[in-house]
Length: 461
Image 1: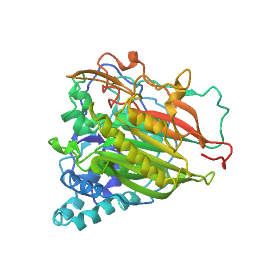
Image 2: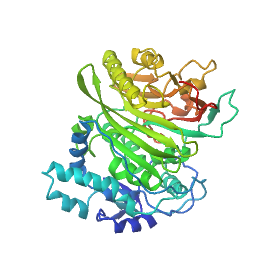
Image 3: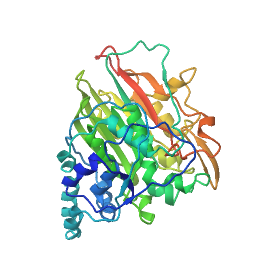
Image 4: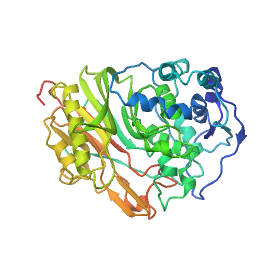
């Protein structure tokens, strides 16, 4: 499947009943442009591949679970420290993680015909494995990412833009929205004709994704097209102090790709030292009366500093032109569900997602005019405060070049305010071959904003 650097963390994982046999080999060089390098390795992201050699099982279990909405909650371990800075290079060896079979998988293989047994294993994987492991230090993990990426081009720099009328807030939280590009789709279906296949290899692309998350250290993280949830994002982020929830698409296109890692879906993460879970809902979106292939997760969290409630939702609407009315129906269904979850808009709401819709589309207008009183956070980057960015995705496919604004962070504008937002990459930074690339892992840009509670907690929405 993929490789990672061997170190302290790999040793620790030998105590987990999911360790597979590994062999050592060196990572190939890809690009003459070099990054600034970090101190020596202290851990191993690659070891997490051992936690889930269940590609065959993943293709079934989450898909079945995704077809029926439900609720869930769990309690992963506490967070580690804060991200650090780069320094010097270090030699590294990596252990191959995809060819062996874990002891956990061997035990499961005898009972895969039982849906109940699969469900029990999913619970074990989600709740038990990571609880046996020590928390990770984000600084160490960030250093490891940067060493693993030492032969890639330098990371693209982005800055936060603050509101002109931002006077600061004692209670703020950071939200990150990102379609990370499913690995199976990037390599097998999306056909980015200007992106070298070598740039899409999971062996290094995973580090680019994790580096982006670690650099901005969001309190709440919303991801789409996640097909490495169980073997990468859940085990790593839970040890960084995040509570994790995943909902796969019922009929994920990833399953059509040979050697896939299971279905893709939406994933939601929040730092447990900032929030605690009040309720969780998994939603399969409908278009009128038809159940569709798109999903959403909605969780009500309580801020530990203020005691105030916030509902966060993550979704990914139907893609492609010609499906505008379908997206409108899906968005309308999501709003209806969120109205119920927020108890008629009495709980502030943040909705993150790849809507696959430009601001001119009806689904965008429906969100902007809904009774939930939502506004789009990234308008703060515009001069008038009323305009969306010119693009959040930019790619080249055989059908031509696509430069679109499709991704949004919606928020309850009377209960919350936007203090700052992360600027987008410029056309010059993105380059003529567009996204993804050797120095950016997805065809969508991440959106990151700092939100604060309004001064008057009793103000009506």
